Image 1 (tube, rainbow, N blue to C red):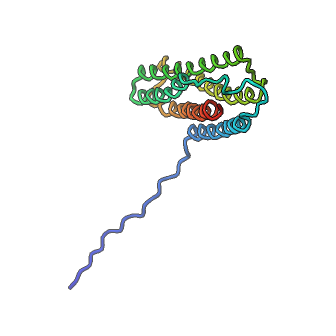
Image 2 (cartoon, rainbow, N blue to C red; image 1 turned 45 degrees about the vertical axis):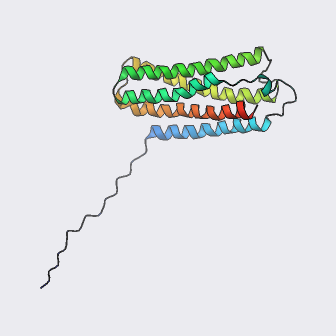
Image 3 (cartoon, helix red, strand yellow; image 1 turned 90 degrees about the vertical axis):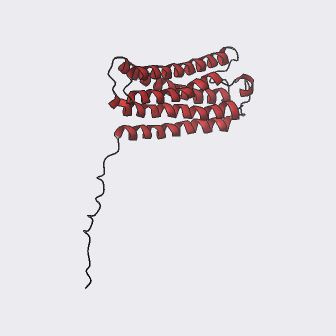
Length: 201
């Protein structure tokens, strides 16, 4: 006589309940997408008008590669990641140190941009209304510098919270969302640097 055994049927898999995506992450991603479209317009305008100025000064005559400032800005993406890692580990003093380093590197970039503009205006007479190059250069580079300035203000506010002991490891996710903006600013600079100081010269 044969016997058949039937195993217990496994209960049907229950799909995980759908949850709303994090509002902070969604908001930052939407901001980055919107700002990317604005930067794209400025980049396209610069490439369209490059070489079409009827009078000087021209890019090849006055532009120098901002190597130091670029290194500082790109390095700040590393320091901000180290800061967030330190906050997750509960090391507030190390977080403050790396976060301050990020601010100082960004500030050095802005100072370099200001010195570059001073030289272009004083030594070469290049104003925003001098020619097409001046208009598109100051618009594109200035738009990026504005975003760096906004980022530095937000980073400084977070540093104040850190120095007063208001930040804890549970705030690491919020600081990481802010770091997305800073990484975006750094990434855009790679594009601006390539377009203005490499292709546009």
